[in-house]
Image: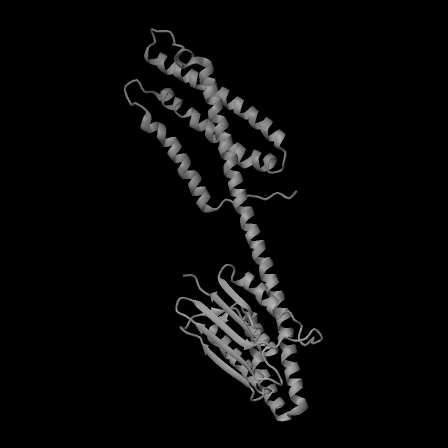
Length: 359
């Protein structure tokens, strides 16, 4: 299994330095400075912090990465157990030695008092040192696990983001042919009955292609630019419509600075033109898109409903599904989409509200 090395950022190093400075400065504040104080008495207060420091970094820098993170738990526990016992013994006997000799230096006429053995008790003192060293080892391991977990979580988030970006790019690549295919089908239909309108349609299509081929490569475009594209697309669709079809369009980008994912609305509008027009009956399509100062962008599309038969295979049928997938990838938990057919089946409504900026 590949080892994940923990990189120590400057902030982590600073936290380590400050923490140990506080630990080593604490005994100074607790020492009673008097005429009987000597170097052995002074160092006696630092034997536990020093032993903790050594044990902490042996486990933190070597044992935990080499054994614990490599799933060699048994060896990790054995080595740490030995270290804890050895360090506890060194601290215990060092503390006892310094205590006896520091006191004896000031009272040479008295035998060295067995201070640690009687006052605290030999066994109690040893148990105390074992508990402290075990806590130090546990703390160093816990800190390493926390750092590794945060690093792993960061990598997972980055991997998820890359996956989402790849999926989004794939959806865009699917959408371009889908959009162009539907548009070319409309122009082909125009050619059969009105060549002049077909020429105008090709001109409008060239305007649309610039947006599809260039602006669509960005993750976001200005709402104003997207609405201009939609307006050009609707103008293209109107060329082949008869007088029996009523089109109501209101596009308002609202305040400047609003951005939107490119081509997020076009499949909804394509769907309206595909299912909302009848060659024999009166039809209507209402398209209202509005941007607001709070960052909301509302797209309301209402059209007469003339569902296609099962034999009508025009278009690829992936438009609305793509919209749903792109919304989940681009605006998770930041959109509301209500759609459906009226009770009598005559009208289809699609209301999409997107929160484009944080509030």
